[in-house]
Image (tube, rainbow, N blue to C red; front, side, top):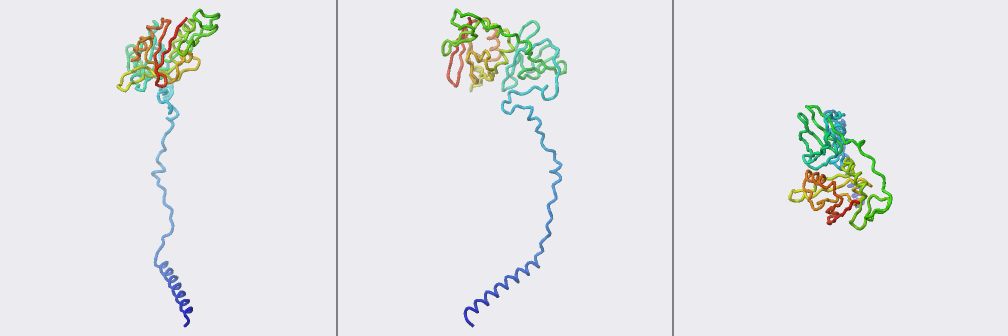
Length: 280
């Protein structure tokens, strides 16, 4: 038999053998019918996460939290004889403080759990209100922006100290500032404005001590903006007196509020800087 015929026969036999093997295997192996997996009812019935609380939080600045009255329903206004002048918030909520004024125009610094009158104490301090427990009933004390007096008009005529006519604040040098006296007096009489046009938190040194107050959220055209304070500045001393506590800062403010000359030592972008302010 010619060689080419032998090769053809061999290839044909090999192909038939493969087909036979496949047919036999298909008959011997039982392939189960397709049946889709049953759904996991436990997972289907599991309640989805509740993300509604996110809308009540400031994810970018947690310190600016809303008060309970904004989240858990309205809390009534307190009947206690106190007026909220301003608040100072700290990353440590125990260190946050509120400045409250009594009917006698006396101002004091309070923290959470401090007592006000018998049966009443502070439970939470937020940006514009304080929550108190008054004999077991939650109440809130608000900053009353309606009490803010209108600013006095701009003075006319040139100042004898070099303040340009019609100006409230003028920069006479890189860090030397002259302020109109009537403008300064109107600002002092408006404590609400002074404390809500800026945010300040204690600046904590590596050893845990407070070495000043870092400021931010400075309102444009406010007193602080006009004298050149910038967000993230750290005010360390005023007229040589260090700011090492919130109570000390309030005491210093009360002691200096009748002064007309101020020297403010601060750090700006990690650089020491001194502002000199003369009120005329």
